Length: 187
Image (cartoon, rainbow, N blue to C red; front, side, top):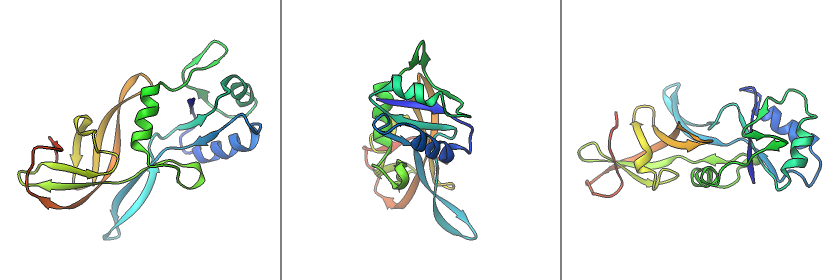
C-alpha cells in the first residue's frame, strides 16, 4: 500500500535518506520522491532537467502501516502523514496509485520515480497530438499546453481533491491534422 508524508519543501531528499536509515528492515518496501523531466531553455540552449512532481511530499510503500507509523513517530522533524485517522494513517486511494503509475516510467536512480517527457506534434490548425509518454490517454485532463515553456498543465484527482500538475513535452514536428489525440487549448 502507498502512503504520503508531508515534509518541509526542499527537505524531501534528506527525509528519504533519514527514513530509509531509521526505519527497521522489512517494514518499508520503498520510500521515494516522484519527479518529472522537463526541457528548459537557459544560456541560449534547451536542457533536460528533473524537478519534483509534488514538492513537499514523500511517498512510502509498505504492507505494515501500523509498524511504519510507530517508527516514523520516532524520527525528528517529520511534518505529518496525510490521511491520518485514529491509530495510524490511511493508504493512498487506488485511483491515485493508478494515476501515479500512469505518470511514472518505472524506478529511476535513488528510488526516484520519474514522469518522462511526452512527445507531441503540432498539427495544422494548432492542435496538439500526443505521440508518446505519460500524457497518452490523458488528453481530456490536459487543461493547457504551453509550447513556449514546453509544458502541459494536467488536472488530476489526488488525495481527494483536484490538482494541476505540469508535465514536460517535446515537440517533434508538424503532422497532418487527425481526429485522434487532439488537445484543445494551447498557447
